[in-house]
Length: 201
Image 1 (spheres, rainbow, N blue to C red):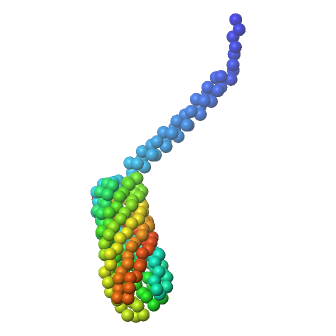
Image 2 (image 1 turned 90 degrees about the horizontal axis):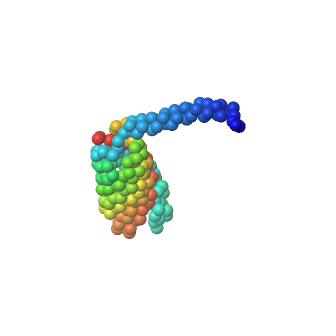
Image 3 (image 1 turned 45 degrees about the vertical axis):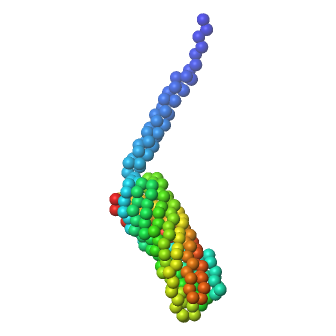
């Protein structure tokens, strides 16, 4: 009877057994870390009240008979209430610009609705809103006043830290065309904002 003998088999089995333990251990550690991160992440999906302050840039796209409008810093305040996937807020901002001898100052106030997608610490959203804007124009140092319809749309993302704090960024477009005695001024443009918010679950 011919019996074959392979001295390499016991060594191969030993090596396989030796290397399988670290692989299994690494997988277990990764699974535990994932569970810990999910458990430690705050839950922004519940209903909560919030208040936010934002700052950034207003980038007008319109032109006037007096030249192109200049990009300027902008700021806003907002208070709102979020449910799991939907939120509402009141947003008030400052928009100002200049084109030659024309200076504009606008204070848009909008009711906004946003659709949210809670993903742990990151909460992307899209929003839209309508409202009004008291405006003031200085044309060669002569003041004019108006109240204009305004609307917004855009998207952003909130990053949740702890139980109360949120930082984020959003970009949107605003429609704003006040009508004065000398004509209509088209102040449509982009808003790029960084936000900081306090949350009250």
